[in-house]
Amino acid sequence: MNTESARKLRTVVLLGFVITVIGLLIYSRIMAYSLAPTMKPADFHGLALWEIPIAYLIDYFSHGWICLLFAFVAAGLVYEFVPKEAITKYMGSGKIAGYGLALGMAPFLTVCSCTMVPLFGGVLFAGAGIGPAITFLLMAPSANILSILLTGELISWELAGVRIVVSIIVALAAGLVISKTPWGRAIEKEHQRTVPTGQTAMELIKPPLDERLWASLKFAAYLAKQILPFFFLGLIAVSYVQAYLPEDIVGTYLTGVTGVLLASVIGGPLYTPTLVEIVLGKGMYELGMSKGALLSWLMGQPYDVANALAVSRIAKWKVVLTYMIIAWAGSVIFGLLYGVLSGSL
Amino acid sequence: MRMKEVKIEVLGPEPPCMRCQAAKKVAEKAAEKLKQAEISVKVEKANIMSKDTVGKYGVLVSPAIAINGVIKFMGRVPSEAEVEKSVKAAVQKEA
Image 1 (tube, rainbow over the protein chains, first blue to last red):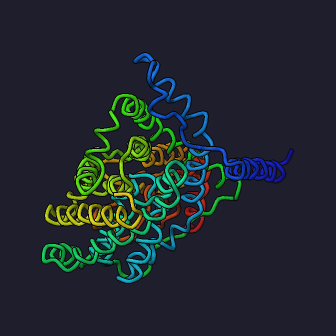
Image 2: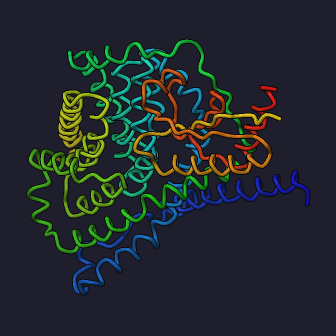
Protein backbone atom coordinates (compact mmCIF):
# COMPACT_ATOMS: atom_id res chain seq x y z
CA MET A 1 0.00 0.00 0.00
CA ASN A 2 1.43 3.41 -0.81
CA THR A 3 1.73 6.08 1.85
CA GLU A 4 -1.11 8.16 0.46
CA SER A 5 -3.76 5.49 0.88
CA ALA A 6 -2.26 4.35 4.20
CA ARG A 7 -2.76 7.88 5.42
CA LYS A 8 -6.36 7.92 4.25
CA LEU A 9 -7.04 4.60 5.90
CA ARG A 10 -5.60 5.81 9.19
CA THR A 11 -7.69 8.97 9.01
CA VAL A 12 -10.84 6.91 8.46
CA VAL A 13 -10.03 4.52 11.31
CA LEU A 14 -9.26 7.31 13.76
CA LEU A 15 -12.31 9.34 12.78
CA GLY A 16 -14.36 6.18 13.14
CA PHE A 17 -13.09 5.74 16.67
CA VAL A 18 -13.89 9.32 17.61
CA ILE A 19 -17.37 9.08 16.14
CA THR A 20 -17.95 5.80 17.97
CA VAL A 21 -17.01 7.39 21.29
CA ILE A 22 -19.35 10.33 20.70
CA GLY A 23 -22.02 7.94 19.48
CA LEU A 24 -21.73 5.84 22.63
CA LEU A 25 -22.35 8.88 24.78
CA ILE A 26 -25.34 9.97 22.71
CA TYR A 27 -26.70 6.43 22.71
CA SER A 28 -26.41 6.21 26.48
CA ARG A 29 -28.27 9.52 26.72
CA ILE A 30 -31.09 8.37 24.47
CA MET A 31 -31.43 5.12 26.37
CA ALA A 32 -31.40 7.12 29.62
CA TYR A 33 -28.67 4.85 30.85
CA SER A 34 -27.03 6.19 33.98
CA LEU A 35 -23.36 6.98 33.62
CA ALA A 36 -22.93 7.75 37.27
CA PRO A 37 -22.47 5.14 39.97
CA THR A 38 -25.79 3.81 41.16
CA MET A 39 -24.88 2.42 44.57
CA LYS A 40 -26.63 4.10 47.44
CA PRO A 41 -25.16 4.39 50.92
CA ALA A 42 -27.47 1.64 52.13
CA ASP A 43 -25.99 -0.80 49.61
CA PHE A 44 -22.70 -0.74 51.45
CA HIS A 45 -24.08 -2.16 54.66
CA GLY A 46 -23.06 -5.72 55.19
CA LEU A 47 -19.97 -5.49 53.02
CA ALA A 48 -16.55 -6.27 54.47
CA LEU A 49 -14.00 -3.49 54.74
CA TRP A 50 -12.04 -4.61 51.70
CA GLU A 51 -15.14 -5.28 49.66
CA ILE A 52 -16.38 -1.70 49.81
CA PRO A 53 -13.92 -0.08 47.37
CA ILE A 54 -14.07 -3.05 45.02
CA ALA A 55 -17.84 -3.00 44.85
CA TYR A 56 -17.82 0.75 44.35
CA LEU A 57 -15.15 0.70 41.66
CA ILE A 58 -16.94 -2.03 39.74
CA ASP A 59 -20.17 -0.09 40.03
CA TYR A 60 -18.44 3.09 38.98
CA PHE A 61 -16.55 1.80 35.98
CA SER A 62 -19.38 -0.34 34.67
CA HIS A 63 -21.29 2.91 34.24
CA GLY A 64 -18.66 5.58 34.08
CA TRP A 65 -16.30 4.28 31.42
CA ILE A 66 -18.27 5.81 28.56
CA CYS A 67 -18.32 9.15 30.26
CA LEU A 68 -14.62 9.05 31.16
CA LEU A 69 -13.64 7.88 27.69
CA PHE A 70 -15.68 10.63 26.12
CA ALA A 71 -14.30 13.29 28.45
CA PHE A 72 -10.69 12.38 27.79
CA VAL A 73 -11.14 12.02 24.02
CA ALA A 74 -12.99 15.33 23.85
CA ALA A 75 -10.31 17.07 25.89
CA GLY A 76 -7.59 15.65 23.66
CA LEU A 77 -9.39 16.67 20.47
CA VAL A 78 -10.14 20.17 21.65
CA TYR A 79 -6.60 20.70 22.83
CA GLU A 80 -5.18 19.55 19.51
CA PHE A 81 -7.54 21.45 17.26
CA VAL A 82 -8.01 24.70 19.12
CA PRO A 83 -6.08 27.37 17.16
CA LYS A 84 -3.30 27.98 19.65
CA GLU A 85 -1.37 30.47 17.57
CA ALA A 86 -4.41 32.74 17.25
CA ILE A 87 -4.86 32.71 21.00
CA THR A 88 -1.26 33.41 21.85
CA LYS A 89 -1.16 36.16 19.27
CA TYR A 90 -4.17 38.04 20.55
CA MET A 91 -3.82 37.22 24.21
CA GLY A 92 -0.95 39.63 24.55
CA SER A 93 -2.46 42.32 22.38
CA GLY A 94 -4.75 44.23 24.67
CA LYS A 95 -6.92 44.29 27.73
CA ILE A 96 -10.35 43.56 26.30
CA ALA A 97 -9.11 40.89 23.94
CA GLY A 98 -7.09 39.52 26.84
CA TYR A 99 -10.12 39.21 29.13
CA GLY A 100 -12.26 37.76 26.38
CA LEU A 101 -9.76 35.15 25.37
CA ALA A 102 -8.89 34.34 28.96
CA LEU A 103 -12.55 33.54 29.64
CA GLY A 104 -13.32 31.88 26.34
CA MET A 105 -10.20 29.90 25.77
CA ALA A 106 -8.83 28.98 29.17
CA PRO A 107 -11.27 26.09 29.56
CA PHE A 108 -10.02 24.44 26.39
CA LEU A 109 -6.31 24.95 26.74
CA THR A 110 -5.70 24.04 30.25
CA VAL A 111 -6.70 20.48 30.83
CA CYS A 112 -3.04 20.01 31.56
CA SER A 113 -1.80 22.04 34.50
CA CYS A 114 1.66 22.35 32.97
CA THR A 115 0.33 24.72 30.33
CA MET A 116 -1.45 26.94 32.79
CA VAL A 117 1.25 28.66 34.78
CA PRO A 118 3.51 29.25 31.73
CA LEU A 119 0.59 30.86 29.95
CA PHE A 120 -0.09 32.99 32.99
CA GLY A 121 3.50 34.19 32.88
CA GLY A 122 3.39 34.68 29.14
CA VAL A 123 0.21 36.74 29.22
CA LEU A 124 1.63 38.91 31.96
CA PHE A 125 5.04 39.44 30.37
CA ALA A 126 3.60 40.09 26.94
CA GLY A 127 1.91 43.16 28.26
CA ALA A 128 -1.76 42.23 28.45
CA GLY A 129 -1.56 43.12 32.11
CA ILE A 130 -2.18 41.39 35.37
CA GLY A 131 -5.99 41.45 34.99
CA PRO A 132 -6.36 39.06 32.06
CA ALA A 133 -3.56 36.93 33.44
CA ILE A 134 -5.39 36.43 36.73
CA THR A 135 -8.71 35.88 34.97
CA PHE A 136 -7.08 33.21 32.88
CA LEU A 137 -5.51 31.60 35.88
CA LEU A 138 -8.77 31.36 37.80
CA MET A 139 -10.93 30.37 34.86
CA ALA A 140 -8.68 27.56 33.78
CA PRO A 141 -9.01 25.07 36.61
CA SER A 142 -12.54 25.88 37.70
CA ALA A 143 -14.17 25.46 34.32
CA ASN A 144 -11.95 23.33 32.14
CA ILE A 145 -13.56 21.04 29.64
CA LEU A 146 -12.82 17.83 31.54
CA SER A 147 -14.27 18.96 34.83
CA ILE A 148 -17.33 20.51 33.19
CA LEU A 149 -18.06 17.35 31.19
CA LEU A 150 -17.75 15.20 34.28
CA THR A 151 -19.77 17.55 36.46
CA GLY A 152 -22.52 17.47 33.86
CA GLU A 153 -22.49 13.72 33.40
CA LEU A 154 -22.01 12.67 37.00
CA ILE A 155 -23.94 15.28 38.93
CA SER A 156 -26.16 17.38 36.70
CA TRP A 157 -25.95 19.65 33.71
CA GLU A 158 -27.69 22.35 35.68
CA LEU A 159 -24.80 22.39 38.12
CA ALA A 160 -22.26 22.27 35.30
CA GLY A 161 -23.90 25.33 33.74
CA VAL A 162 -23.96 27.18 37.04
CA ARG A 163 -20.34 26.25 37.55
CA ILE A 164 -19.36 27.83 34.22
CA VAL A 165 -21.31 31.04 34.85
CA VAL A 166 -19.99 31.45 38.38
CA SER A 167 -16.44 30.73 37.25
CA ILE A 168 -16.71 33.47 34.63
CA ILE A 169 -18.01 36.00 37.12
CA VAL A 170 -15.47 35.18 39.81
CA ALA A 171 -12.52 35.04 37.41
CA LEU A 172 -13.48 38.33 35.80
CA ALA A 173 -14.05 40.01 39.15
CA ALA A 174 -10.70 38.84 40.47
CA GLY A 175 -8.89 40.03 37.35
CA LEU A 176 -10.55 43.44 37.41
CA VAL A 177 -10.07 43.96 41.13
CA ILE A 178 -6.42 42.92 41.14
CA SER A 179 -5.60 45.13 38.18
CA LYS A 180 -6.84 48.07 40.29
CA THR A 181 -4.92 47.30 43.46
CA PRO A 182 -1.57 49.03 44.09
CA TRP A 183 0.28 45.71 44.37
CA GLY A 184 -1.30 44.42 41.18
CA ARG A 185 -0.23 47.57 39.37
CA ALA A 186 3.28 47.29 40.74
CA ILE A 187 3.66 43.91 39.11
CA GLU A 188 2.15 45.13 35.89
CA LYS A 189 4.64 48.00 35.80
CA GLU A 190 7.53 45.71 36.57
CA HIS A 191 6.81 43.64 33.50
CA GLN A 192 5.69 46.36 31.17
CA ARG A 193 8.88 46.90 29.23
CA THR A 194 9.01 43.35 28.01
CA VAL A 195 6.30 43.89 25.41
CA PRO A 196 7.56 42.13 22.30
CA THR A 197 8.30 44.48 19.48
CA GLY A 198 6.93 43.58 16.10
CA GLN A 199 5.69 40.25 14.92
CA THR A 200 6.84 37.06 16.53
CA ALA A 201 8.68 34.72 14.23
CA MET A 202 6.26 31.85 13.99
CA GLU A 203 5.76 29.45 11.13
CA LEU A 204 3.94 26.55 12.63
CA ILE A 205 4.03 23.28 10.83
CA LYS A 206 0.63 21.65 10.46
CA PRO A 207 0.78 17.91 10.28
CA PRO A 208 -1.80 16.02 8.18
CA LEU A 209 -5.18 15.15 9.67
CA ASP A 210 -4.43 11.54 10.57
CA GLU A 211 -1.38 12.60 12.55
CA ARG A 212 -3.34 15.31 14.33
CA LEU A 213 -6.07 12.86 15.25
CA TRP A 214 -3.50 10.41 16.49
CA ALA A 215 -1.77 13.16 18.45
CA SER A 216 -5.01 14.17 20.10
CA LEU A 217 -5.71 10.58 21.15
CA LYS A 218 -2.19 10.32 22.47
CA PHE A 219 -2.77 13.48 24.45
CA ALA A 220 -6.03 12.03 25.76
CA ALA A 221 -4.10 8.94 26.88
CA TYR A 222 -1.49 11.15 28.49
CA LEU A 223 -4.18 13.01 30.42
CA ALA A 224 -5.77 9.76 31.49
CA LYS A 225 -2.44 8.44 32.69
CA GLN A 226 -1.88 11.61 34.71
CA ILE A 227 -5.30 11.77 36.23
CA LEU A 228 -6.69 8.26 36.54
CA PRO A 229 -4.37 6.95 39.30
CA PHE A 230 -5.49 9.79 41.57
CA PHE A 231 -9.03 9.40 40.37
CA PHE A 232 -8.84 5.76 41.42
CA LEU A 233 -7.55 6.59 44.88
CA GLY A 234 -10.20 9.26 45.15
CA LEU A 235 -12.93 6.78 44.29
CA ILE A 236 -11.70 4.41 46.99
CA ALA A 237 -11.89 7.27 49.48
CA VAL A 238 -15.35 8.14 48.23
CA SER A 239 -16.55 4.58 48.70
CA TYR A 240 -15.59 4.73 52.38
CA VAL A 241 -17.16 8.14 52.76
CA GLN A 242 -20.38 6.78 51.32
CA ALA A 243 -20.23 3.69 53.45
CA TYR A 244 -19.29 5.19 56.78
CA LEU A 245 -20.12 8.89 56.88
CA PRO A 246 -23.43 9.03 58.71
CA GLU A 247 -26.13 10.87 56.85
CA ASP A 248 -27.11 12.94 59.85
CA ILE A 249 -23.59 14.41 60.07
CA VAL A 250 -23.73 15.47 56.44
CA GLY A 251 -27.27 16.71 56.93
CA THR A 252 -26.23 18.77 59.95
CA TYR A 253 -22.95 20.24 58.78
CA LEU A 254 -23.17 20.39 55.01
CA THR A 255 -26.46 22.20 54.66
CA GLY A 256 -27.48 25.78 55.24
CA VAL A 257 -25.05 28.65 55.65
CA THR A 258 -22.66 26.53 57.72
CA GLY A 259 -22.65 23.96 54.94
CA VAL A 260 -21.64 26.49 52.32
CA LEU A 261 -18.91 27.94 54.53
CA LEU A 262 -17.57 24.55 55.50
CA ALA A 263 -17.66 23.21 51.96
CA SER A 264 -15.84 26.27 50.62
CA VAL A 265 -13.12 25.93 53.24
CA ILE A 266 -12.47 22.20 52.87
CA GLY A 267 -12.87 22.33 49.09
CA GLY A 268 -9.73 24.39 48.57
CA PRO A 269 -7.04 22.47 50.43
CA LEU A 270 -8.56 19.14 49.46
CA TYR A 271 -8.57 20.00 45.80
CA THR A 272 -6.46 17.78 43.65
CA PRO A 273 -6.48 18.45 39.91
CA THR A 274 -7.89 15.04 39.35
CA LEU A 275 -11.62 15.40 39.12
CA VAL A 276 -11.97 13.56 42.41
CA GLU A 277 -13.76 16.54 43.86
CA ILE A 278 -16.62 15.85 41.47
CA VAL A 279 -17.07 12.27 42.61
CA LEU A 280 -16.57 13.16 46.24
CA GLY A 281 -19.05 16.00 45.86
CA LYS A 282 -21.56 13.65 44.31
CA GLY A 283 -21.04 11.19 47.15
CA MET A 284 -21.74 13.81 49.76
CA TYR A 285 -24.63 15.26 47.78
CA GLU A 286 -26.28 11.85 47.91
CA LEU A 287 -25.73 11.76 51.63
CA GLY A 288 -27.65 15.00 51.98
CA MET A 289 -25.30 17.86 51.21
CA SER A 290 -27.22 20.87 49.90
CA LYS A 291 -26.88 22.08 46.32
CA GLY A 292 -25.51 25.39 47.54
CA ALA A 293 -22.78 23.69 49.53
CA LEU A 294 -22.04 21.43 46.58
CA LEU A 295 -21.43 24.45 44.34
CA SER A 296 -19.07 26.10 46.79
CA TRP A 297 -17.34 22.78 47.23
CA LEU A 298 -16.72 22.59 43.49
CA MET A 299 -15.75 26.24 43.26
CA GLY A 300 -13.13 25.77 45.92
CA GLN A 301 -10.51 24.73 43.44
CA PRO A 302 -8.85 27.92 42.22
CA TYR A 303 -7.38 28.75 45.57
CA ASP A 304 -5.71 25.44 46.10
CA VAL A 305 -2.22 25.59 47.50
CA ALA A 306 -0.11 24.02 44.75
CA ASN A 307 -1.48 26.44 42.19
CA ALA A 308 -0.89 29.41 44.46
CA LEU A 309 2.71 28.38 45.09
CA ALA A 310 3.49 28.22 41.39
CA VAL A 311 1.96 31.62 40.80
CA SER A 312 3.64 33.25 43.75
CA ARG A 313 6.94 32.68 42.00
CA ILE A 314 5.89 35.16 39.32
CA ALA A 315 3.48 37.43 41.11
CA LYS A 316 3.82 38.68 44.65
CA TRP A 317 2.19 36.98 47.61
CA LYS A 318 -0.16 39.90 47.99
CA VAL A 319 -1.61 39.20 44.56
CA VAL A 320 -1.97 35.51 45.32
CA LEU A 321 -3.65 36.27 48.61
CA THR A 322 -6.02 38.75 46.98
CA TYR A 323 -7.17 36.31 44.34
CA MET A 324 -7.50 33.51 46.85
CA ILE A 325 -9.73 35.69 49.00
CA ILE A 326 -11.83 36.77 46.01
CA ALA A 327 -12.17 33.19 44.82
CA TRP A 328 -13.14 32.04 48.29
CA ALA A 329 -15.65 34.87 48.73
CA GLY A 330 -17.07 34.04 45.29
CA SER A 331 -17.53 30.42 46.20
CA VAL A 332 -19.36 31.37 49.40
CA ILE A 333 -21.54 34.09 47.86
CA PHE A 334 -22.57 32.03 44.87
CA GLY A 335 -22.96 28.90 46.94
CA LEU A 336 -25.47 30.75 49.14
CA LEU A 337 -27.16 32.37 46.17
CA TYR A 338 -27.51 29.12 44.27
CA GLY A 339 -28.70 27.40 47.42
CA VAL A 340 -31.45 29.98 47.90
CA LEU A 341 -32.45 30.08 44.23
CA SER A 342 -32.55 26.33 43.81
CA GLY A 343 -34.33 25.89 47.12
CA SER A 344 -31.59 23.64 48.45
CA LEU A 345 -29.51 25.39 51.05
CA MET B 1 32.57 21.37 3.44
CA ARG B 2 31.80 23.37 6.51
CA MET B 3 29.25 21.83 8.84
CA LYS B 4 26.10 23.85 9.00
CA GLU B 5 24.92 24.75 12.45
CA VAL B 6 21.25 24.88 13.34
CA LYS B 7 19.90 25.96 16.69
CA ILE B 8 16.90 24.20 18.16
CA GLU B 9 15.33 25.78 21.21
CA VAL B 10 12.95 23.73 23.30
CA LEU B 11 10.74 26.13 25.23
CA GLY B 12 9.12 24.89 28.38
CA PRO B 13 8.44 25.91 31.94
CA GLU B 14 10.95 25.57 34.74
CA PRO B 15 10.79 23.05 36.43
CA PRO B 16 10.15 21.11 33.24
CA CYS B 17 6.84 19.37 32.63
CA MET B 18 6.67 15.86 31.27
CA ARG B 19 5.64 16.78 27.78
CA CYS B 20 8.43 19.34 27.51
CA GLN B 21 10.96 16.72 28.47
CA ALA B 22 9.51 14.48 25.80
CA ALA B 23 9.86 17.31 23.27
CA LYS B 24 13.49 17.82 24.26
CA LYS B 25 14.21 14.13 23.84
CA VAL B 26 12.71 14.19 20.36
CA ALA B 27 14.85 17.20 19.45
CA GLU B 28 17.99 15.51 20.75
CA LYS B 29 17.29 12.31 18.88
CA ALA B 30 16.66 14.24 15.70
CA ALA B 31 19.93 16.09 16.25
CA GLU B 32 21.79 12.77 16.51
CA LYS B 33 20.38 11.62 13.21
CA LEU B 34 21.07 14.91 11.49
CA LYS B 35 24.71 14.69 12.47
CA GLN B 36 25.05 11.86 9.98
CA ALA B 37 23.68 14.16 7.31
CA GLU B 38 26.47 16.66 8.00
CA ILE B 39 24.18 19.04 9.80
CA SER B 40 25.26 19.97 13.29
CA VAL B 41 22.42 20.85 15.58
CA LYS B 42 22.63 22.55 18.92
CA VAL B 43 19.71 21.77 21.19
CA GLU B 44 19.02 24.29 23.91
CA LYS B 45 16.41 24.52 26.57
CA ALA B 46 14.80 27.87 27.23
CA ASN B 47 12.50 28.86 30.06
CA ILE B 48 9.12 29.72 28.59
CA MET B 49 8.44 32.04 31.50
CA SER B 50 11.60 34.10 31.34
CA LYS B 51 11.26 37.66 30.16
CA ASP B 52 13.78 37.08 27.42
CA THR B 53 11.81 34.27 25.91
CA VAL B 54 8.49 36.09 26.11
CA GLY B 55 10.13 39.22 24.74
CA LYS B 56 11.43 37.26 21.79
CA TYR B 57 8.53 34.96 21.02
CA GLY B 58 5.50 36.36 22.81
CA VAL B 59 2.95 34.17 24.58
CA LEU B 60 3.46 30.49 23.93
CA VAL B 61 1.75 27.25 24.75
CA SER B 62 4.28 24.80 26.11
CA PRO B 63 6.04 22.77 24.85
CA ALA B 64 7.23 24.82 21.91
CA ILE B 65 10.19 24.26 19.60
CA ALA B 66 11.95 27.01 17.70
CA ILE B 67 14.40 26.33 14.90
CA ASN B 68 16.87 29.10 14.17
CA GLY B 69 14.71 31.54 16.06
CA VAL B 70 11.41 30.65 14.41
CA ILE B 71 8.69 28.83 16.33
CA LYS B 72 7.85 25.69 14.40
CA PHE B 73 5.93 23.60 16.90
CA MET B 74 3.72 24.73 19.73
CA GLY B 75 1.66 22.90 22.32
CA ARG B 76 2.54 19.48 21.05
CA VAL B 77 5.33 16.97 20.98
CA PRO B 78 6.33 16.53 17.33
CA SER B 79 7.78 13.36 15.86
CA GLU B 80 11.48 13.02 15.16
CA ALA B 81 10.83 12.98 11.43
CA GLU B 82 8.98 16.28 11.64
CA VAL B 83 11.81 17.95 13.50
CA GLU B 84 14.37 16.55 11.06
CA LYS B 85 12.38 17.77 8.11
CA SER B 86 11.99 21.29 9.40
CA VAL B 87 15.67 21.49 10.35
CA LYS B 88 16.58 20.46 6.81
CA ALA B 89 14.20 23.08 5.48
CA ALA B 90 15.87 25.69 7.66
CA VAL B 91 19.27 24.65 6.34
CA GLN B 92 18.10 24.99 2.77
CA LYS B 93 16.69 28.40 3.47
CA GLU B 94 20.06 29.55 4.79
CA ALA B 95 21.95 28.25 1.79
